Length: 120
Image 1 (cartoon, rainbow, N blue to C red):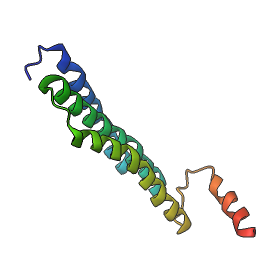
Image 2 (cartoon, rainbow, N blue to C red):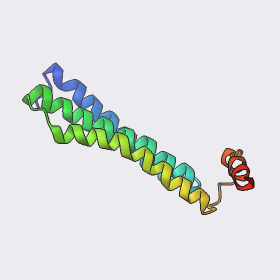
Image 3 (cartoon, helix red, strand yellow):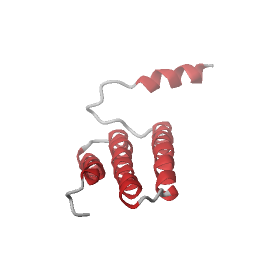
Image 4 (spheres, helix red, strand yellow):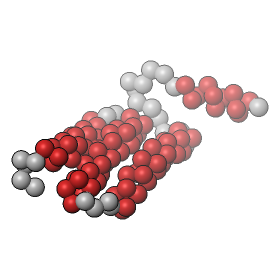
């Protein structure tokens, strides 16, 4: 990678964007007040960061080396598929285990839905 080839700029840019999203995810894990907002930062931005980095790596190998990496392709697919679903399931179980919301939270839409289900 010598930097003078224009086809290298897009993969490098994607990997850099992925790094920035991953860094912002780490900052969100430290700064946010409760498990729900922390998991939101971890699931959304970390997933996006990993996806950008993997797509950048995939494109680099595809364009520069002429190598279609099925492992990278499957990694992109499974991260995109499983990370948001896993975060949703973990947060739903935390909510049902009565983990408190932060004091700054102003709205709890799920509380009314669960009350209606409990009445039935």
